[in-house]
Image (cartoon, one colour):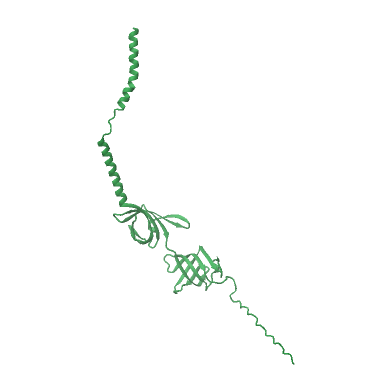
Length: 252
């Protein structure tokens, strides 16, 4: 009986030890990757890389700077230093412009001929078309004009000047207009009240929409070489005429 019991215990022990080994052996018996499978995976990778390279060659990221030359329903054209670029107008395009010191979101309807813009997108070499994602309006190029003041209007805060070519301009003096005054030796801060008829001024600003020869001034420099506030009618003091003293010749 003892011998039979010992044999039974031995069999149970061997079964408990051998079972995990069998399980492990079954787990490790996966079919190894063949050379054919590796070759197929390599070819698939090559195909994906070739497709990606072709896509990159067909289109490339680009940022261009220029002036809007024309605008249509579906496209607009930007004139750069090297060539004109046609840009597709889509609903996904985001338009921004700095207005009153804040970045403001606009619509594609705000794009106009003459606007200076920076355009970001992807250029399709096949279609020769720039697929735009963002357009940043820099604004129109600033206007610069010089002339002699012929009238000042304190009600509308406007200044009328006549340029050397005899053209007349109306200058809108804005709350943001910066003014400088030449006092004869240096530029000092000025203001609307310092401008008088006859002064020669240099104006930098932007054209007022739908108003010919009218400029919204961003900066005005009064270059008239005189000191404001000083009397211009004062008679200059003449130098005293020297008196000739005749010496008396003694009588011999």
